[in-house]
Image (tube, rainbow, N blue to C red; front, top):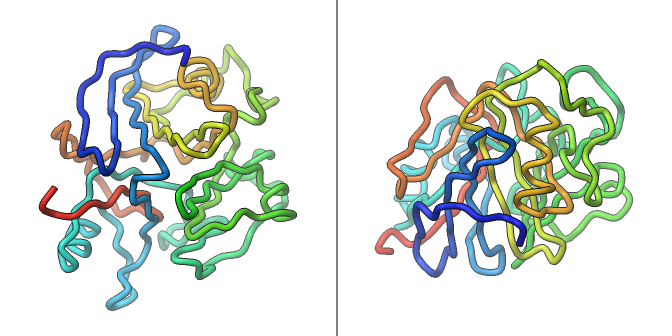
Length: 244
């Protein structure tokens, strides 16, 4: 690994969670890593009991508590419409709620290439959308977002180093073997080039995907962090037994 940072928090060995403050290019981020072969990574959108939008980390906590589980980490995980439904592909427990969108479009989602974050049995992947469409991995959960931040070790070709479009941003990157997953959120407004280079140069992920900006939020109870705000769409979380 090509990074060094101050360790802030380590969760239970079962989840294999490390969260840390990371400095890159004079800017500060919070980054959390997981061993995908051990962590129980899931996506959440609607409550299976009544079909209503979960929309918040607290509601996911309440849902899990019904089964004696707890939420160790969470982050918003993909762009959504005004009704909080996913803009792109969304798969939960093997059931597709929305198909893959491969066409170019407005906004950051349509800034091709975009991609899909996939959670499988003991692995995770970030896959460019058209590759995913042609040869999808065995995903149990999947969420499409965009743009890709890093593609095969290279930054998205449309990123400008001196861009003045800066926001609080969050995203995900995955190691080449699919075992290590990195989630990161900026602690100050950054542009796409800076955010992508965090994943490429500091975290060393050959594939990374942008989740969102401005509304980006993080939940890590071990850091006493629970970002609030208006309801979200898709949420990614790490689940553990409540007695951990």
